[in-house]
Length: 323
Image (cartoon, helix red, strand yellow):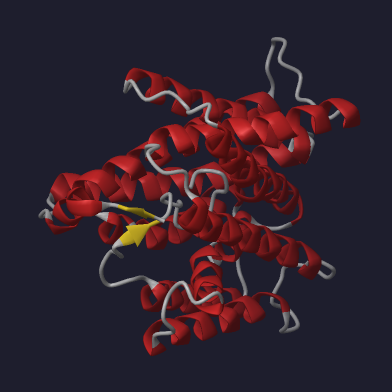
């Protein structure tokens, strides 16, 4: 792991003002809207593999521009390339495909709740491998979160239609994959490489994996004009997630990781709210209970102070590939 040293401690101790809370609200709303845009793209005829490639290419290009502008391009060291490829597969490519596939069948709000389980799985994995201690409060949060996920699939009438439980399970498997990537990033981060170029490298690693899959399966999204809903919605997903994640990095740097992690609440609520606003989604009492328990679980699992050593910062929830 890589020690953050004094700079992170200083950032964590800085006072937060209206601008910081405004940025927190902005990136939460943006990530929630990105989930809704992914549903528009997937239900308009785009294939999940092609859409994942499009979205990751957009957000990866934005992060590449930011990395080059900051004078910190992606590293070409062998350990960094290996790191970016592994993270690109487990934390970006597979979860992005799963996100678009799930939004074909599930309401956007339910997808947002399912993907919000990522920090719970991350902590549980850290405890299982003795990376973090098993604190009672945080372990209680994991239990509460698992109850919330059970409420999504087990009660009859919880989901809007029969046969949808496997798609919720796919979202949870994708969330687990993102958790593994976050856990891996904490233990195998290449020393001496900054966060922004590593984040960019993970996106580009996902692109390298998705390009051959999309070409072999013939699922690429047509780039020629005129564009339709598929192209515009997929582009909006990439832009929103790229901007939101860049904002997330800024908030971590200026306000500390604990403050930035509070965006998980906004992301989950915004994902549900955008689904209701744009698609007129209405949920059963079990879904609302699952939402309440998920928010409670996030509050319990969230660390009260930053650790001495931190992984590459992962986006706290819904949209894959931006951590």
